[in-house]
Image (cartoon, rainbow, N blue to C red; front, side):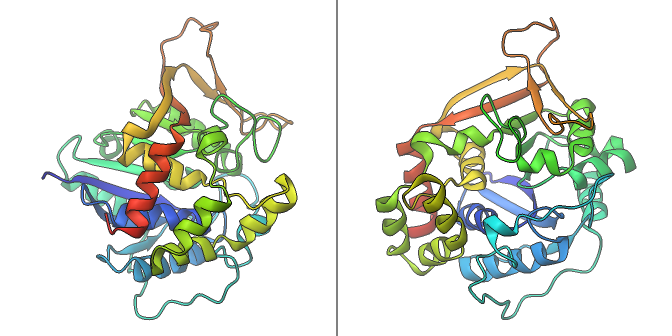
Length: 314
């Protein structure tokens, strides 16, 4: 089997951790290394959380490099209310053995691309696109060698989760998202809406994963804060797993229910719509599509893949 070569760029909070564990257990992918970015937590804390997840997954150990520590222009706003102060539910998780790799994550990304063949490496971005945008500005020729960028970002075809129209990862650094989109690399946004509706984990799904393995228990326990938040929001314990939904869409595309190409733009105006990905669904602009928008998953296929990666070791 020829494995897909990927770089995972992450602001590792609790749902990133689940997505990372899934990828580490997928036999069809080789993670070359991780780069961390500020978002849910600081880039430094994201690196710690990624190392914790690698240890918990107990498969192989790609290096983890720290990237950008702040957005391009805006002040950083953490997601403590969703993921806890440490990004992992504040349940006392620690790194036992692994260390952060020496070197800058953005420069390491460019080094790997310069050494690779064109189209050899894909990038899976689970957080704000700051590292990607900086890499584009530093070495556009290297970044043109990327086969495709997958971003857990945008509201898809639905509503936002930090404003009426914006999703957190894009809103955190909309300027970086616009640079990435305008650059013209093949790009898929897996929207916030892809993790909702039939893709949400209900109480039975949560307990099934919690009781299936040590890794399954880790995946649920580190999302404790999100479960509590959703219990208040929806009246029952459910999990909307944005990054695992994105990872499933990338690595197990059979689970995708709705995904189409559209002309898109990112709103960087300093108003209520800042961070919105504007999707020209009805082709008003007359412009050619420049991104794919994945807006829905088959819930049964997504949950089956999630369960297999966390509970059956691939």
